[in-house]
Image (spheres, rainbow over the protein chains, first blue to last red):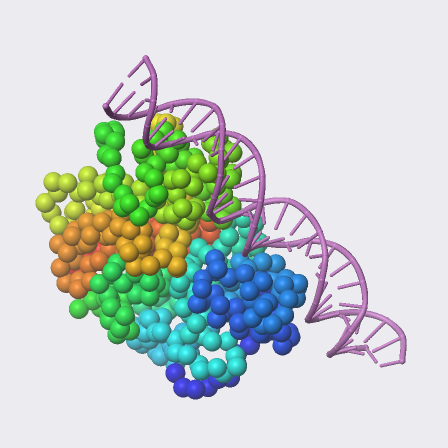
Length: 226
Length: 226
DNA sequence: TCAAATTTGATAGTATTACTATCGAATTTA
DNA sequence: TAAATTCGATAGTAATACTATCAAATTTGA
């Protein structure tokens, strides 16, 4: 990908915040710092109090933006999912061949995002780490009602839809392209998780190329397997 | 599977408890009731205080068995993984044909465990629900050191090893049978999670047969795809 | 079967977490 | 420049995640 940093402004579901954190400087700082803290220490160790001290600001200010840390975490995850969708779109734009497009998409999913070395903006490498380390279930608290669930998963859903469009072309026989899309995405995440935290549970090493090869071999369409 | 309920006594890594809960009546009750509570309300809502009131017993007694609720949760997950390994072994015993054995294993993984209607023992249907609802990352707190991680994943590892042995025969070309084993197991869990909590994110419905077909289609070895 | 050891229950207490409420100061907007 | 909004500071509450102590009950084993 080239270095077009056109700052795609992402649009989030209103249900993901109380007050839009992008609408103020302190809101953006909340986002920036919380990514760092959650990526490093995990969501369990992360509290609004610690975040407020770090900023510095106060708990009450943070509560004006997010109802609780779970909502904040899901906001961050949504940010990641939206970015991933955008990267997917970019990587597959103008590729006419179905299989090639699928492979470009896979390549993108298997990529470790690189550290943007303090663009004063959100650190996307740490954001990816956070999402992978937390796991999908973290971003969907059990007590949500149906419309809250929709809000919490809206970005993920968009990512799924885009991926499944690609899959509908490359895997024509597949009756469940959406399920396949999640399966691929979550398989990649799971492998990345194991590499980060329990390498003894997998025989795929941390090299990006090996991850891609593995995922490609599993998920490549039938007619194109060697 | 027939109704042989031979009460396979499972052996757990010592790192998974302070005092073996199977060694006393109250320990077994702790296990039994915590499965119910966590499956119903989630690990976030679950506290030792509530469990103690339910039993009834006291917090101090529970702390004598487990250091904290995360350790207890992982103990329960390990129980599930061990049971799953046992089921896998049973379902594939004496099957000589590699592909058939693989398919029997898949069938077993895709099965919703049935409620044992109060065998006064642990409710395995709820246990499965708990494991699926929590997600893999829940059972591996970030702050663990290496040997604790080994203890926390020992049962899962055994399950992986058994599955990967089957895969080494059915998927001879696959260079990473362990990674494939986790990918299959976690894909099944992820689909089950979506069916339970966010059916709008998948196009595989809750019918067991459809889940099996989907998983089978994705993961069946190359040479045998239709 | 009785003494010793172990296990449990009951109570108390602490530090932290996850909030909610209030109010004045600073800043923005109109 | 008045009005509205936002933020910081402080206070407070209920719940959580523990730890400690000690007596009662139970188990063990000589």
